[in-house]
Length: 150
Image (cartoon, rainbow, N blue to C red; front, side, top):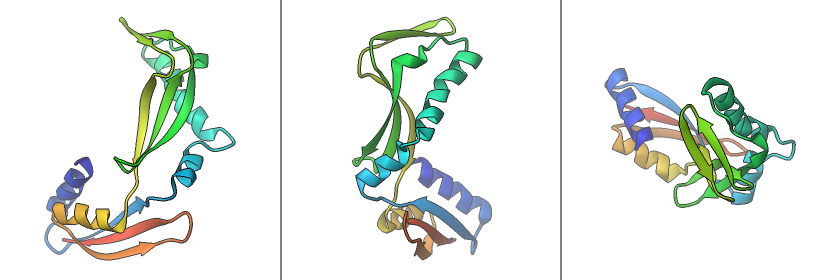
């Protein structure tokens, strides 16, 4: 819904006859997607855990960084990769004057990265007032550029 709203706004702002290039990541094999969001060097995990570091520094929070682990999850129903911070043990955290308790396995959903198919991009374009004039797919890791016409 948000993507359609964004594209509809762009359509209104750019006007009749406008062209819009939209880059999208494409649906891939779930193992490939999970590996990309849970890389063996731990770069994405460090990025994700940094959210708690930033909360501790800037929001008067006291998250125990060792109590959470990065999890990358493919959500096929929503066609998106999700990043979570999962509680490894029961833990509590304060953010300002609010307290939160996390049970073992409970997660903080920190990011969603939607993946698309040609059909889903075309439907999204149509719903927001565009037509799809072109769709080019790269070689692996398969991303696409859609040319939308107003």
